[in-house]
Each structure stands twice: as C-alpha cells, then as structure tokens.
Length: 288
Image (cartoon, rainbow, N blue to C red; front, side):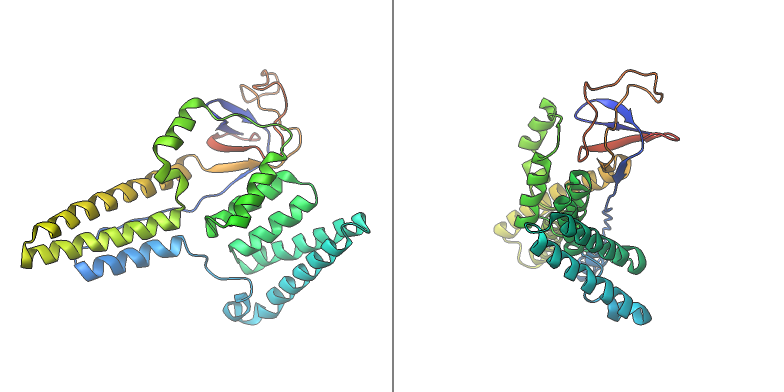
C-alpha cells in the first residue's frame, strides 16, 4: 500500500497510481572555467531528453528498423483514427489503441523517453476517454517540454474533465503565490539561470581581483544571490521528487481510506476519479 497526501490530507488507496521523478544533482567545482563545464556535464543531462524516437534507430544499431517501424505505424494509426473520429468512432478507437501500443513499444523496447512521444500517447488516451492515463502521460511529457503551450493547454483541459477534483489547501495556494519563481518557472530554465549566475559570479570575482571596481562587486553580489536562490529551488524540487514522488490515479473507483484495510472509513465521500494527482508519503504491501 502507498500512503499519500492529497491536498493536506493523508490517506491510502488501492493499486492504480503511478509516480515518476527526475532528479537534480549539483556540484561545486574549484576552477572558474571548470566550474561551469563540470556543472553543465553533471546537471544538464538530467533535464535534456536522451534521444528522440526518430533518432532512436541510429542509437540502437540493429534495433533501428524495429523502433522506426513502431514509430511509423503509431503515427499512421493515429492519423487514421483522427480521420475516422466522426464517421466511424469505434474503428477510430481501435486505431488509437494501435497507436498507443506502438508508441509504448518504443519506450519499452528502445528505452526512448521524450516529450513528443509521451505527448502523443497522452493525446491518444484522451481521445479514448481515459483521463487518468492522458494526464499521466502529459505530465511525463512536461518533464521534457516544460512550458510548451499546447501541452499545458491539453493538460489543463484534461484536468477539467476529471469527474471530481480536490481543492488545493489554502497554505499551498499561498506558497505558490509567494514562491512563484519556484512554481512558475520550468526546471530547465531555472537550471540555466543557475548555471549563468554561477559562471557570472566567478567571472566577476576574478575581474574584481584585477580591477576592484565597485560595480563589479555589485555584479558579484547579484549573481551570487541569484545562484543561491535557484540552487535552493532546484534542490528543494529534487528532494520533493525523491521523498514524495508525484503520481496519478489511473484506476476507476479508487477509494481513499483512513487506514490500510477495507474496514477503515473512506477519507472522501466519493471515490477518487482517474486523473487525481497526488504525492506519495509511504508504501505498504498490497495498497496504493
């Protein structure tokens, strides 16, 4: 079982949730040029998609034909499904399922993870009316495509289609208002600002040793503050992913209870609808 928090409540639900996270790791090198290089080497790969489905073939050697074939068949099935949406909905649903099957084969067999792939899977699930899996894959896509306008719109629209929703706690809303830089700016942009500030602080410190100008000192202070601010933001985010990874309910009729047995009273008056988002607090056998 997994105990999780849903908007300031602690509860338990049966299996049917998935969670994923992308860690942040930081180092503080010594040399000025090496500092930026080492930080980039260790940090950037965590926020950059490893490869696209289209390029998976060249990376996978002998498996290239299979992955490209899955991609081609998935895209073809998706296009056909959209063409049949109005004239033959049942046939369209079959093609959406085929598209999902082929796209997911790319992730399973090729180990490919990228925003476009998860975005397409999310779109197909949404067309099938599976809000939970649509939101799950849109959130996966957002790890690779933060701030993408179409993705954000689709995710918000999918959230609006949930059968029920749990309002955010007042404290959470206040935090998101006060710490808007942390919540509103995507991780990769915050990482870029951190790296630029880190490099600027060291460069300005070096320049100050030679010139001793007052404005250089101001640059050092501003850059150091910016570097510290975004480092803390990234570290807090990384800690949250590790200690309480996010998840999405994909099962129908998941009942949140106040304990890890069917005899406990439900936490909410209605079952949690597919697409409900949460953070894991604790795992226990046979329960989510």
